[in-house]
Amino acid sequence: MNTFGEKWTFTSFGESHGAAIGGVLDGVPAGLPINFEKIREELERRAGKGVVGASARAKNEPDEVEWLSGVISQQPTANSQSSLVTLGTPIAFIIRNKDARPEDYEIFKHTYRVGHADRVYEQKYGIRDWRGGGRASARETAARVVAGCIAKQQLAQKGICISATLVQVGAETDPAKFADTIATYQKDGDSIGGIIECRINGLPVGTGEPIFDKLQAHLAFAVMSINACKGFEYGTGFRGVTQPGSAINHLSGGISGGISDGSEIVFRCVFKPTPSTPKAGVKGRHDACVATRAVPVVEAMTALTIIQFI
Image 1: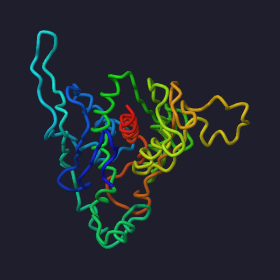
Image 2: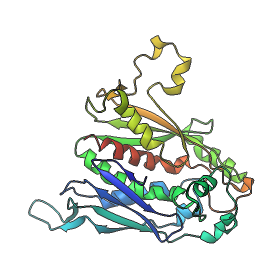
Image 3: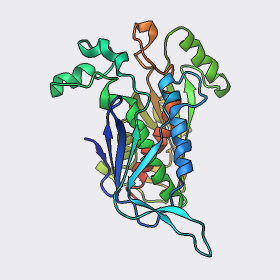
């Protein structure tokens, strides 16, 4: 499945080392002003610009968005400046892969990387893209960030704000020590995982439905689709199992019975260490901590979820 959503749909396409990745958005209303500078900033966050442990490809890939349809320049009026706005038609865009190096993966034409989707893809489909995992690569998440940023801009018009942050790297919970922790693993040719916390503010009471259409189920579905994500919790989460009910009965995470209660929604998700490391004998350009670059992707998938209810 390459399409997310029903009311406000996002379809992604492209492979990690192919010509380009991209997406098509449908359901975006006409007349929505788009801040393309914000999209560029979000893509730089995903690329890990200035982040310790980010892969060389992520740092070098320009991630320049080419808009193919769905937006138009709006001429200035007496009360507004010239801007790009949505037409209400499908928005199509591509990001060309300008720093692809498929030759780095030649060794995997006839073997499988441990901890990746190589083997199951080939067993399921009878063929696979050995060039960095193809569709299974986190390179695909750049398109999600573009789509999610547009969704966030529409949500902001309704007073809904989504923000995520890295709150743990390995066993370390002090943000001031994250960079040193990651650098230690990177120097050893290894990797480490992390936890991201996401907060949603401004969502009114009543979002979500009982039983099989709960808000947290939708959020978990979206976030767990992100590469390397291995767990989701909201409210008290897994930590609540060690506390008595009387101490945590007020910590609902902003969701009760699958329905938003009007307060701040808080959830966390955990990302595993990448199994492709020099210490494991795998050459290539890999992250020492993929969680650092997953923060804007979590925000994007959260926005693409919430926009379905608005």
